[in-house]
Image (cartoon, rainbow, N blue to C red; front, side):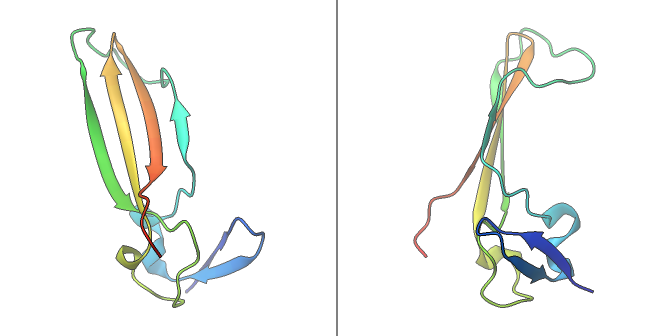
Length: 95
């Protein structure tokens, strides 16, 4: 079974099942202030949660290549003043 993702140049690349589920590419850098959420974030909570994961910015060199040979994505959830801000960027690495 293979899946298709759209790459920036408008072409399609077949991706193996190892790029699905948790490893499905989000393929976006973003800044989102005051995320919508359920419940209450305590106003005393002040800090950040960082998440690092594989997220291919470009098509893999091999059709069924493992995700850890590709690009990395770093996400930050910043909690402050009863709200949460989100930022996500690709790790800058030489190719």
